[in-house]
Image 1 (cartoon, rainbow, N blue to C red):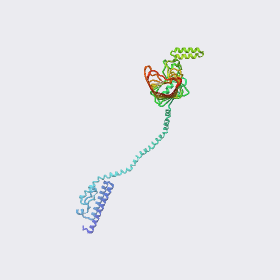
Image 2 (cartoon, one colour):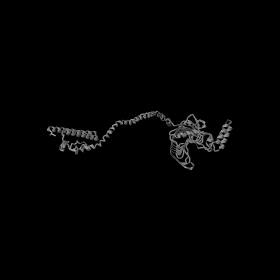
Image 3 (cartoon, rainbow, N blue to C red):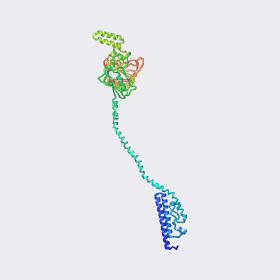
Image 4 (cartoon, one colour):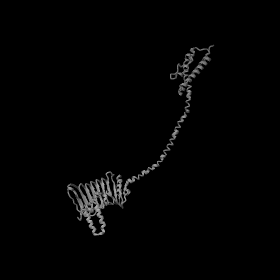
Length: 484
């Protein structure tokens, strides 16, 4: 073959240089693309493809420009000036070398990355594009639609709008029961009392008291305009609440039937025991109907009483029936006479407004009591009624009696052993034996009474005492005595 001209050689060199530049640019562009896509395997495949195209193009140019075989030196002169790819590039990304067949093996290893030809599996990666079909994940959205069903569940809370029934609890709020608690009054008529003066109402009084006893600050009511026949009864407060009131506005009468008192009789009729902060008040009357008892005690011998009744029968025949009745009564009533109203072991008791009359024995007694206040009340029985003391105090302290009218057959007020701090003022006494500090040293015992004050008292009797003992701290002032 003839020699190539210089111009042809330069043209071939320029074409080779141009091809080399294009191949480098292709390499660089592929590297940038690989970094952006992050798919190194696909990039390697593209590089190998580009390398093969470049080799084919280069061989075509060699065949065209250099029909005769070139020396290895000339062939090496046409390779890429860079001896080896840049260190930060992947080994498969370097520019293809055009040297002797020794460097062809380097592309073959890149052909070995044909294992990345498992890139066809990346085509299945295109199948992951079905992940857009993962719009079926919208099927999980149906579960939210059940969450829309919870919105209906709030509709059930709409029944809680039926708290309109809680308006029904407002009737419980209508603690009308508490309203009775404010005025917890227990009327004896509500417990079966008749109030006709003939029917025994003792049971009704017991039941009314039991109900009052369980309620603090309750009131037991004995209404006005009724007459209640009540036998011996005890109002015991040992297990009762405090601040109980007995409102007595009607009339209470004692039975005259001997069977109501037993064979030996009873020493008390209306008995109040172990009460604390108790009040007995009202405008009512307590009538002991004691006349049938007094006739017996006026004589030491029942036969004398019967004889006197017979003599009275001779005076006027019209009274024969009355005398026979009196004879029967005298022969049947027990000798042990009851006190009308008795308080034992009580603390802070108030007694006011009540009238006590015709007691078989003492009218009102306080024994072993502390903090007693008696005022605006009255006691009435005939001046000849035996042993009918008005108010009797024994073993009691801190007692005040004022604004009382006392008329009886014995001491208006009798103060005996164990009493102290007694204050009496504005009391009218008579008929009676006055205010007596007596019965000291009964049965040869010694006793003591002290700190007694009596003021502004009108007496129709005398004070007296007996036995031995000590009386001190007694003060009388502005005491008027008449018909002694």
